[in-house]
View 1 (cartoon, helix red, strand yellow):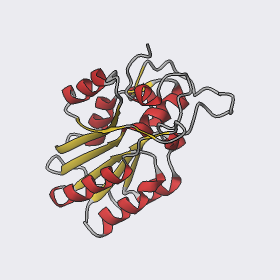
View 2 (cartoon, rainbow, N blue to C red):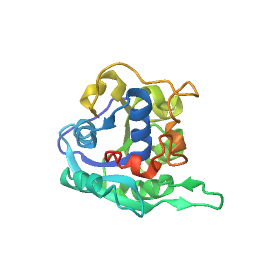
View 3 (cartoon, helix red, strand yellow):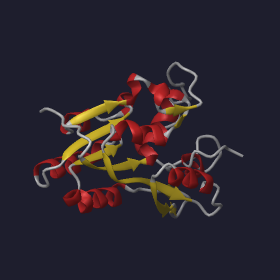
Length: 209
């Protein structure tokens, strides 16, 4: 279908920070410029809300990252990392992000999901067919689910011009780890720290101490 992008359109942008962070790290060994992502996704339209779903740790080392998001006009929705018996760590914002998008949908003409996670396909379909919203997705195409690309009204592939969306990008592709495909997949989120640094801290985008 034809995509409508008019200045009067009311837009909400919901950012799956974990997914974009790990995609950028695995593909390009760089960090995401979230302000640039929002600017590209908005395309000159009326921004009603931009929210990034992020993880907090006890050390609060990610505070600078949160402040940078706020200065860029991006609201931070913060959740503490959960540590299970045995030391496994989990931090998942999928349900919270979906609920927020649905709750805001009555006030929006277009919903933009910044994620490549195929788990959001049911959300895309619900927003399109039940709520009548135009649903757009922006993500790194090389690590985005094909089903998500197909479900959305529009897909912006950040791999087409990665330097526009990355910090410390030096060109080229990703790197191979001992597993052959980078440290971990985007959907693994905060499961394990590949470099000995807590992955929730890595997710913040702050320099590793």
